[in-house]
Length: 284
Length: 127
Image (cartoon, rainbow over all chains, first blue to last red; front, side):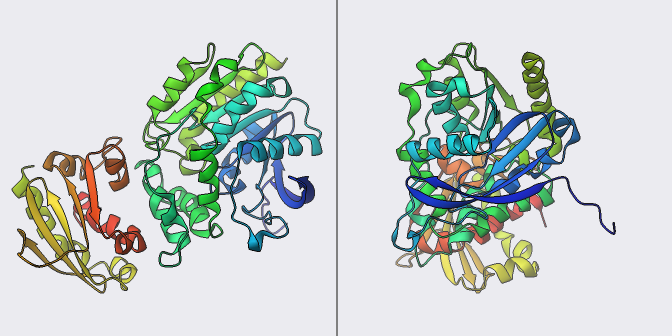
């Protein structure tokens, strides 16, 4: 073979979500305990490429990620041309459970970042028995808005440029340039109004301060890891959330920001691997 | 740094920006005047097609600016640290936590946000 292929393999399948057929892109690598990964708002599965090529993970876990409809290589549903995209708690939850069912995952570990970390808390409250463990990266029960999302989708401001420029500071200063810019590229590329539509979920439809008390970590362990440089989901937001959930384990990750798995993979794995080891030991 | 020292740092923007061709190119559709607040010292920055055309201290009577970005001298000093601490590492982190304020017509700022952020960060790298 003239080149060395990465172990990541991608496929497509059409799932019915919210009554509409959605062509969804999945990718996976590794074998073992299923580890389902959720990308951030306005981005896609590429954020997990370093987790999927880390043999310390893939020797023990079948790592799977999928692009939500409207994101990455998943199309928007039919009729999108007349729709305003808005992600909701209900739709997001349904999509994750539909993917887990379609792939016949047996009590997967679920790891989500940012809005993916937010929805993890809803699943912890209402669907804990379906999961082996839950990992929220940059996760909190609520966020105070810090800018007007109308700037993200309007004709006199370039959508890709503004999405990336708004969030560029969420990458920690210590991130290697190549990883910083790969992380930002997803935002530069995202479809018109998609990041804004995700933030509808994040800002308007996911205040979970009412349901953290429902989370029972005896049913499903909950790990929260947040980067010290994250000013969107701040360490204080995560620590406040963890304090409301008995048994939740919160860690503030030094020299990392809002995109730990893609902005600084070497630093992130030092925090992730001990969590995965603990989950693996508990699964024996 | 004092207010005057921060204002002086902004005064070096023509040298820090105009020889960076990729940065000038990024701002090539921007011609405007905006104001930065170095603590209590206002500094007017004129941009012409991505180059810094002028930096002047002080308010100019009856001369408008499109948008203003204000922070204390202490905040700008922390912002320009070689490795800034969390909360001072990005313009929007500072606005989020109230250590910087943005006002005025935000459209030219938002349409050129990466460019504006990078010129404000230029004194950090001293290049």
